[in-house]
Length: 436
Image (cartoon, rainbow, N blue to C red; front, top):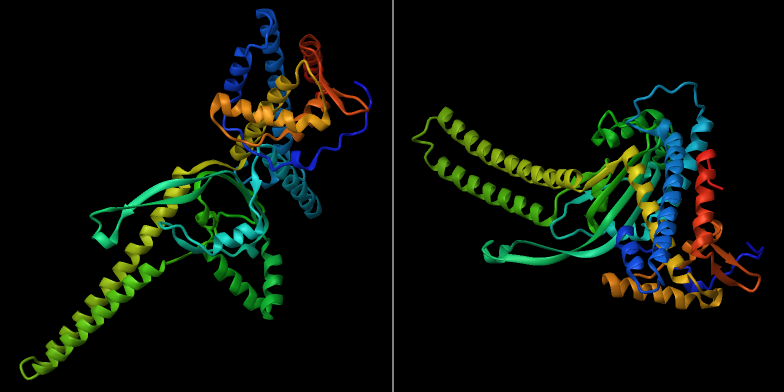
């Protein structure tokens, strides 16, 4: 490959990563079915090259997963292995920072976008029509990563109270199709020091306050662990309900309903009491006292029952989200994310390789190549995406499948050259920890 200075890509090419909602198998099938191949032998050679691109990336995924698993081992809440040797606090902190950065790189490679603090703040002020209102204290975490992939409006319906629930009210809820989160609670001593400074209180009061704050957290949750989660189809305004330290708040409608019921019950009880006072000449004092206590107790029981019914309805919604929309946890989440990143990288690389094959393209013409790939995806699969040509080209250059000149001219290896090149890289990969 000719030595050349790194390419400075046009700013418009360095777009946000975007998920390609098509499998690599389908993309390869369409590429191989295209009329650009002069013979069956050439098509077979192209199939071999595209297959080897995927196989080499899969080998790299295995290495990546092993490295991430080693980093994650001391933070994994599901770890069953015996760890030999002690890890100092400084080493833990260093590992955590490295793990956090590598996880960010991984989910970005899988075409996830980070949920910004501004977006999260907006979420906390809103609530979906059938969601629950919850509070979450983010100051409890010293690691909080939130990434999503794919947005759409999901159609839903519910009984319309205006028609006595005889008709359905149809509405749309904006959702994240995939949501990845990684969280770690702050150590107890660190959090106590923060509370002492924040509220200007003694250590004893800070410990008591922290105990109250964390009373909603199950006892098996440890501040030493990093919890990884992947969810699907999560309403955007219900993201906060996925955190383990939430406090459920009733919606205004439910408060109004319970308050109205309590008010009506109190009025009824007061009228009943007044009536009973008029017949005190008939009832003996013990009988009157029993009647009053029974009436008041009945009203209190009804209100308490209403509260628990409402609370259980909220808990059911939370349980359904965590049960039916949870895709993977902890080590399993790492494996899923590594697989997703591999799938996206391979799709991008084979699309770009196929569209550059047989042509010499200057980097100034890459916008046209990008538009051709966008048009290819729309024509064959009916999807509209903005292809991330920048990262794909960087990887193809790094892998030696695309060469660049000093003038910025780009060309792929021929199919024969690429097939041999990838075979050599694969053989080296089997003999070494890293593919070179």
